[in-house]
Amino acid sequence: AQTVTQSQPEMSVQEAETVTLSCTYDTSESNYYLFWYKQPPSRQMILVIRQEAYKQQNATENRFSVNFQKAAKSFSLKISDSQLGDTAMYFCAFIYNQGGKLIFGQGTELSVKP
Amino acid sequence: DAGITQSPRHKVTETGTPVTLRCHQTENHRYMYWYRQDPGHGLRLIHYSYGVKDTDKGEVSDGYSVSRSKTEDFLLTLESATSSQTSVYFCAISEQGKQETQYFGPGTRLLVL
Image (tube, rainbow over all chains, first blue to last red; front, side):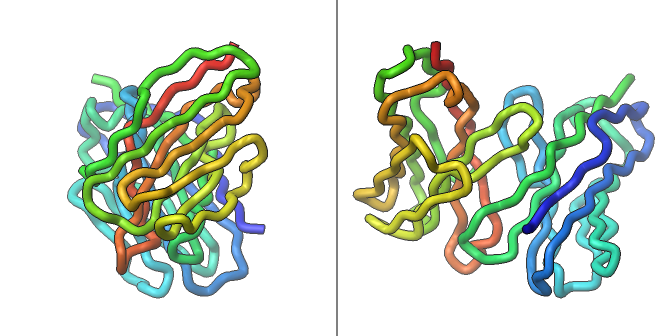
């Protein structure tokens, strides 16, 4: 079975500092995709970053970057220069067949403090 | 913005009543999905569609049915709502050629009393 685990239910960080959110997954598939979604208090699910498993290069999107360790099945999200607007629930997600279901972790609630 | 709207955004209903939630997209995407979000479970797939009249079950499909009679609309029906179906429901789409990446609508909060 495919599973996604986020071991940090809550985290906090000071504004302008850097924080890393952890995610591990379990799969026997060799080709898949990993995502981080952000869910602010508005409840909207916003795609933050996407990683293709066959690409060794870590994805980056402005202040957001990932550390993808395929052998370890680890996919952490680093947020640099944290801003108050980064306060949200962050979900790690995995998919192995296009057009199929996303498998989500339970989420990490991040608070950015002024 | 993937051009997805959901209606209603909030609904309160009573146990045993039928409920239909609507997902509407404006960009002719082939793939559409319904998820539910509950505390401690993240999001879980209910049903999905890969074209008009082509639908399939997800992992939590019991008690739900779907229909897709035209590309832009994907309907989720609770035939007889139960309190366990109190949840936030999200619709999602994925684009042709990038089916692995899903974009979500704003969600519908449903309370079944």
